[in-house]
Length: 321
Image 1 (cartoon, rainbow, N blue to C red):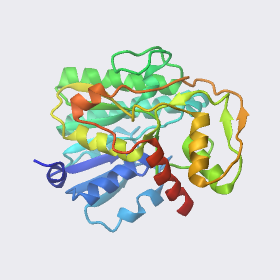
Image 2: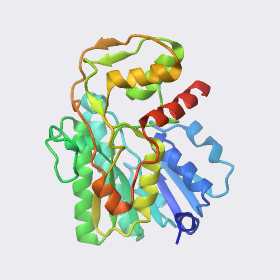
Image 3: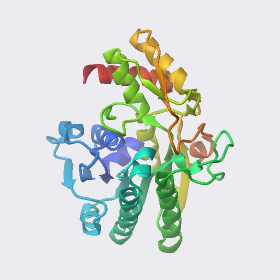
Image 4: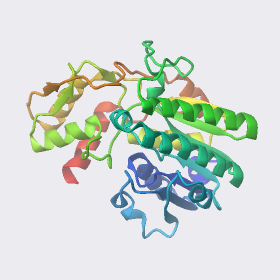
């Protein structure tokens, strides 16, 4: 059966579906004929404007609720076939400033969702894991089985998610896939706020012709991943034949440092503007690059859009929004 036919035959719950990655996934599922797409979001970081375009679709449903409330999670799972759990409090700096809230949302909320999915008898759950789990391991490229010690409260929560998913698969016979995202970017990622990610900040700077500030020397590198690659990984994960618990990298296997990133964006925006440099950020991983071997063999993942094409698409979005 084709992916499109599989989508048409199923009802989906997307937690955090008013957020950046979640709303892009919602759009893809609705465009491809999903029987139902329900979003659970408390709008703490998600935005109603991200899902406004779906509200007239009779196959779309918005449930305002909180994953830290078990009853909200159980209600959201009623009549659902497949779950993509995207709800979380992101950002390393946020977690350093407020580790308790990050823990409540990312660990207690995740546990609530596991229990709700288990009790509803849902056949598969995919969740947003993170490359932050690799911690202080210096080995490149990053392979799923080789992790170091976490460097931030956020990383601790994401690693704990993997441990909980493992024991739920082991003890309750659940099929669960963790997607270790590597710096996902693209349309609907918020360029405003204290914890905005680097690419939307750089995009905003380029459009407004204001020099951005790069943390440290700008030599820290990332495997920047366009959001449609993350959407693809979610869909392929949900319809894979994986059993038990598996964790796979979701990235492009391309290494770009922050100075190069700003050069790419200047080229796209047709500007020349030297960046400022500020202090290095506490809790940051120095270098990140994914090995995609397991992702390809386990769920058939292969990135469709590499960084330069993704940056062009993202720039067009920010320029017109």
